Image 1 (cartoon, rainbow, N blue to C red):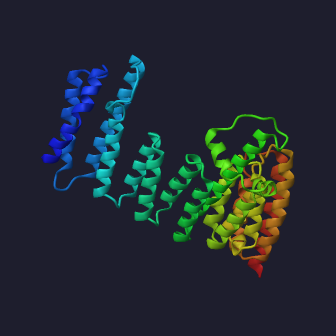
Image 2 (cartoon, helix red, strand yellow; image 1 turned 90 degrees about the vertical axis):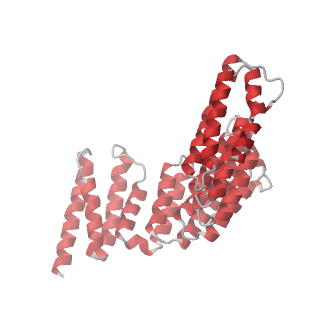
Image 3 (cartoon, rainbow, N blue to C red; image 1 turned 180 degrees about the vertical axis):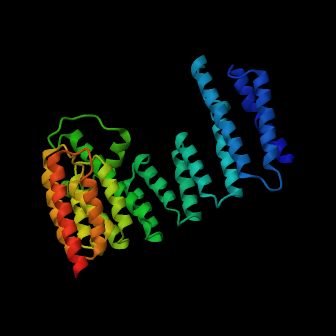
Length: 374
């Protein structure tokens, strides 16, 4: 119980400050002390539970949110910083530190601590927590991703972010998630660089404002020559990493992950990256698999809607291309092609598109008869 009594003594000055500022009444501070005593008692049991720590932290988060609301509502003058301005947040950090001494193997707990530090704007603490977490869990990709994004978005250090992701990949070479996030990281930097050029009018655009964090991130990379930056904006680095990713993990999961990333991004080089990915697909054995054919069809048609004029021409071209490959391969590929045809023949599309698909269906079934008779 000595620990409980010690913690009770530590909060007296904080509660007194809250009363003097008029943020909490005497009865409320008494209730806070009683509640904290209950939580502290639960933490000194022989086998403490993680849930006890989390409940305690949640209580402190709610208390801090209430304090901030009252500060705003009562317009309490903050002439100088006093203990109650930071003590509740500090207590939240201390609770997580104590929890991690007991449950250091719990990755989820580390992530929650990182998120709390980010929310409270504790930039240096986020870096320290991430480093400790990675040291204990070097094979957990999500920790590298958290740390890298913190370096880029908060500290404005793309180089440090890259180093973290590269380190993660060295230790987790077969992680589709890490490779995809590395590509996403560089794609994000391309967009930051593109916005920077737009601000400076280097690409003919009018000047506008850019967020401070983006400004810091770009400045750290300004040693690159203008020509090198142009190549970066064309996607040279992204393409190189994409090629390395497929070389390291030559499977359909890696391909799909990259396609999903590119198809949902708003980058000006999106279509170029998808073409590059399709080209890499065609150079691998995956192109001859069922899933490979389906992915190629998706990339070839892109985001075109069936109501667009260009869709029909592309559909016809994709159909002829895939059918030629299918006729040369095993019946398994024919089944994949048949699935695509059934989709294209579905309702909701206009007659001209259905006619293309119907022709493809006829060619497909003719091909199947040829396979059967051989």
